[in-house]
Image (cartoon, rainbow, N blue to C red; front, top):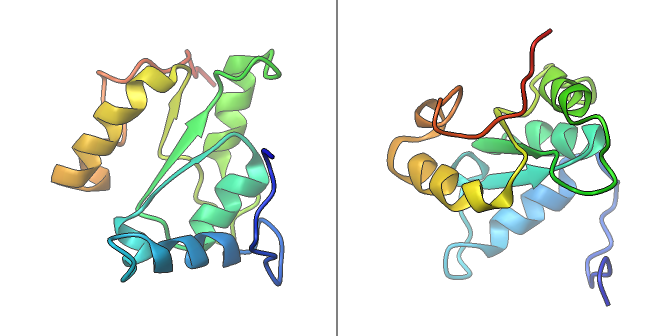
Amino acid sequence: PGGESAFAPPRFKPAPDVYLRAASYVGGGGGLPPARCVAVEDSASGVGSAANAKIGLIVGYVGASHITDKDGHARMLMRGERSEDGRGADVVLADMADLPAVVAAFGTGGGAAVRGASWVRLPSCSS
C-alpha cells in the first residue's frame, strides 16, 4: 500500500536519515554520494530532510491537488525553514512532466545547471 515502507528511520524528517539510506541503495545497489542524488518534496520537513542530507538537487513540488496556494507554497519550500543551514528547494515545479528534463540537466551539469533555469515552468514566486 502507498506510504508504507520496510524502513523505519531512527529519526523522522527533517532529519536526513531517510535520504542517506536511499542514497546508499541507488546506483546499481552500491550507493551514490548524496550530492549526486535528486529529491522531490512538497513539504518543509521533506525539503529540510533533503537539505540536511546534502542532496545535490532539491526539487520542490506544488502540483498536488491538496496545495491550493501554489505561489505561497513554492516560496515556503524555497525558504528552507526546516533545514539546518537554511537551504530550501533549488527549483519548484508545478508539473511533474518537467521533472525528467530537470533530472537530465542535473545529471549533465550538476545543480548549477538547474537552479533558476528559465525552461522550468515555475509558479510565479514573486516575494
